Length: 276
Image (cartoon, rainbow, N blue to C red; front, side, top):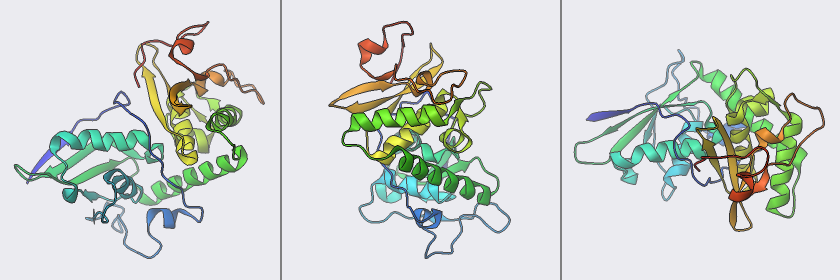
């Protein structure tokens, strides 16, 4: 058995169009699959148990990995999916990019494989030393998403929904000028975050509403924002720049809302040199 250790990859990885994960309304246990199973992914002393997830028949591998990570599984068995060592890194980091609710998964991962064969297991690394703390914060984020959706409401069109989500985030969050809160958890639970947090929180709410999105970044600008698929085209949404700094209570801008490439690259505050 050989083990390949992947170096930490930061947010510069390509994060493309995102899928949707549903959130259980009756608590974290059902979401994480513990309702009828008292198996714990961690041993009593708080260390990860030697537990391996096994895929369900016909379950897409992205969904399987996402569910395994939400359960905080120590090992994820993927041999049945016939994933090569050349594919596993992009697959794993693609899942992290598409699912901002996985804020607790670090961009360090090990995987095991047999010589000349496929990857057998993926071994993720979690940011929490105490699994109870992780589950508490995962549950808090899921509840925050449902609370936000309840306040945002339902709309007839994707364009209306995107605008409503932009406005809600601007009205309920404040830009973190300490640059120490980069996750969806920070923005939706703590109420503050960097551009990374705004981007992740917006993406998570797009997942909630079933709207395709992707992350956009510009190294030259040291900035990140979103694109959404609306009306058959990819349009830019920069919630961070739509939220006034310093924060103004009751004020939400729509200056950078659903702009095409030419529109966001022009004006008084143009965006430039981005990748999506």
